[in-house]
Image 1 (cartoon, rainbow, N blue to C red):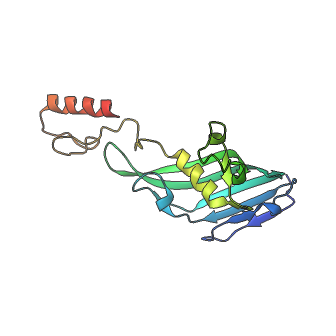
Image 2 (tube, rainbow, N blue to C red):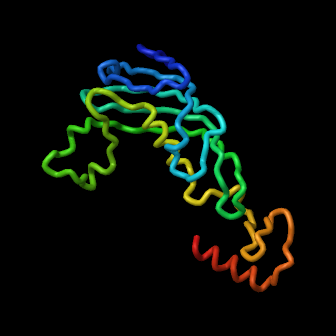
Length: 183
């Protein structure tokens, strides 16, 4: 595949693309960047390695189609045992961007059709915003270090993945059942 335009960015620089640089033939972006981990939706989550991405953008009038691939690793905290674990992210995505001017000024609330769109402001597309959104889609609602994680004993706090506790087993089983119902 040949690209008419190719941009390779520098680590740590925010990336904004002027839509006029995106032609009908396309614009390819490839970079390795550090993103602000405060933008991750999961509390305590952090990047374990830089984000690597490859994106191809094509513009037709004001509509911009974006296809991309992201690769990184995130450190998350297991909701059962509270241990940190690594979550690899290796994902492809396709999004379509529209100008924010399509939102009716008279009605500041988005209708059902508009909720499915991603908008850009002015003539610039914030590539970092697209990337962090894609990573956040990948983070599970309840991160687990492994599906079989036994969690912590609700009475004494022992990590049941590594050792047994000396608590009353009937109390532990009831607490675990209640904990599962809550999730």
